[in-house]
Image 1 (cartoon, rainbow, N blue to C red):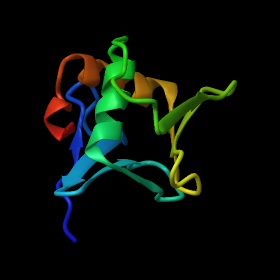
Image 2 (spheres, helix red, strand yellow):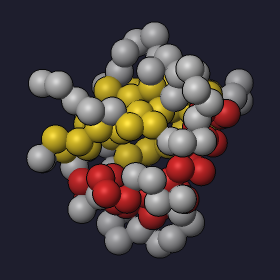
Image 3 (cartoon, one colour):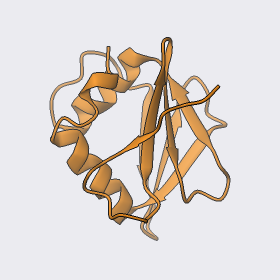
Length: 111
């Protein structure tokens, strides 16, 4: 499967970033610099709930994508239905992704 990945326009050119891609039935999230190469796969409704959470809006659904912030500046994303796939990034890249979310750059991926 050939996915078309999108990153936030707030991510610096050439830097690794959080990327999002879609297939008809799923949304895929990865971090191009994550050495594990993990890809988190979730459904469009769960991704929409994540977008609402990051926009500080009340989500329509309970979150099925968890975001954990580490003391060392890491950010980890995992799905509650597939907890073995953990995407790891750092705070600057995550912040660039969140800015893109708040600007509506990923709304078309949602349900």
